[in-house]
Length: 243
Image 1 (cartoon, helix red, strand yellow):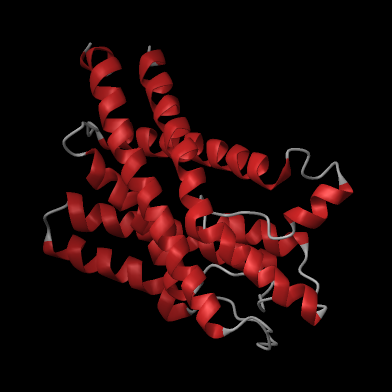
Image 2: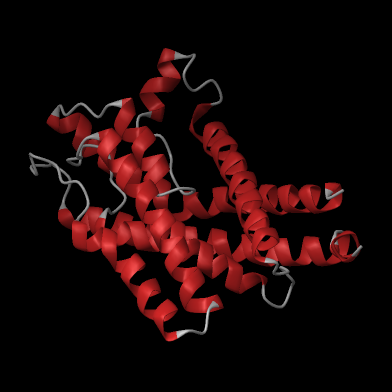
């Protein structure tokens, strides 16, 4: 039974999700609020599909851009911007923790306090940095390609990057290193989906700052997650894994 292991990963994920929320409110949320001013002034419509795509593409650090409007509507975001941001981060934290813990079990590797940060850095590279290299996080009123195309490209990129990281880090054969690099590069050579209309009222400097701030916040999340996973598993589930 791996009950303790499961509980340890979930607790670590919830902790990372809790700490992510104030980190987002330092830089990411103010930039979203600033972009919404341009959106409202320009009369642009930013659909809920785009907000959902931003969550998937830049997860876990994402906030629904139209939270202030949805709060007025009522049922879609019943807890307000802060409450829903925290809820999303808790779910994302627990989910990514379970994925990381499952990967460690499948690969036969232990996550410890000493190597937890490296697991976190690998998760950041796979789920955030690599996809953002060609498909940067988007602010409200920014042009966006088709939602389904973005989600499909993001998922393929994550799977290929995960395979590439495995081959580069855990395999010693030369062919594995070459194939690993090829897998990581392949989705970017193919190209991410692009919007047909690139016009936007959002200043390029604001969009760039948002992309950098989102990546920095996600890096913080993954470092915390990896470290928390290592500590929790080592202290509460190591004996169960050795049994």
